[in-house]
Image 1 (tube, rainbow, N blue to C red):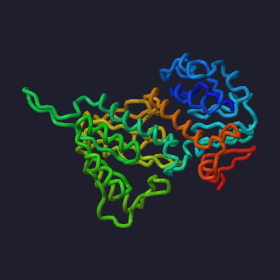
Image 2 (cartoon, one colour):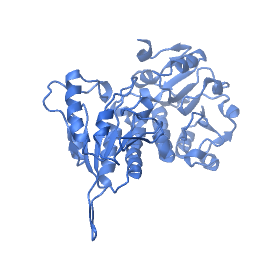
Image 3 (cartoon, rainbow, N blue to C red):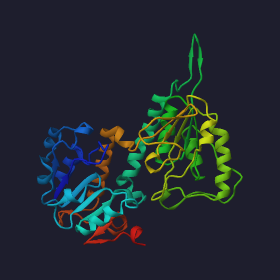
Image 4 (tube, rainbow, N blue to C red):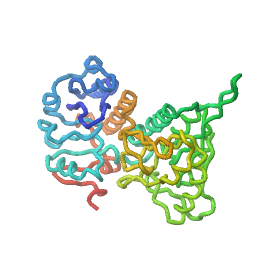
Length: 373
């Protein structure tokens, strides 16, 4: 079984899909691993580390030649995969709802595209879930970046010269990223509050020592969609939520927004009028910036100042922590393939529950029901 790891070519992408740790683990399964020279440099992994773990290194063409499996962060261009075996598996992020042309190109090339962001949110797939592992780091980085931009201290400080009050941090959206943002802001000493459309998250917020901010008078709204994702809410709830948030957000120093709905533009959570109500010097970090943003006026990778408030957000937050993000992504890849490793077949044999969920293309066809229905 020949596994190929290419250097990432997407703009701004500094992660790599395999680590020396996972290369060594794949080698113990009997796989041969080839890594493109320089693939790990932006993630602080030198070529020598891969070689010591048992990988061979070379140019892209030699690495991909005869590959049964290709592991990536962002799905590589089909042109880079010439030389791979017919029907080779390619596991990476495909963003299938927005990159239909890429999916079609993989089908035409006879490749088996495995979309890691389609990993089902079930117990046995938790260790394979790249969205969770990367969102966890993104939530941490959002708070750290906001703290660095914020012109004041996070914790309360009592000094001989007087007391510095703790910053107030409000987290909007309590998924994996939001929970990590809450925990990080709390560790930095901020007074933290949080909200979500899913009522079940109230206990999670409280368990981290933060104050839950929820609409209490609108009945029959749970906000829980399939796979644990939030769903879009009724007009009644949205109006009540907007009123509650508007009153609360005006008192905040830091706001972290995290709301995303798979396959759809990011929902608008903060309007220009709400930004104007905030104190000058406040900071908003929009984790949904690459999907259109939760915040009016947000521009990915730019500091936008409106009404004295700094709005920020990265087009790719996990890549800001490339070394750790790569290590976790690589483990997700390994956990995914090793769970289905068949010694007789000499490689992974995917089952229906997880295999059918992540498989986009096979035998020249687009086969995923989420794309064909």
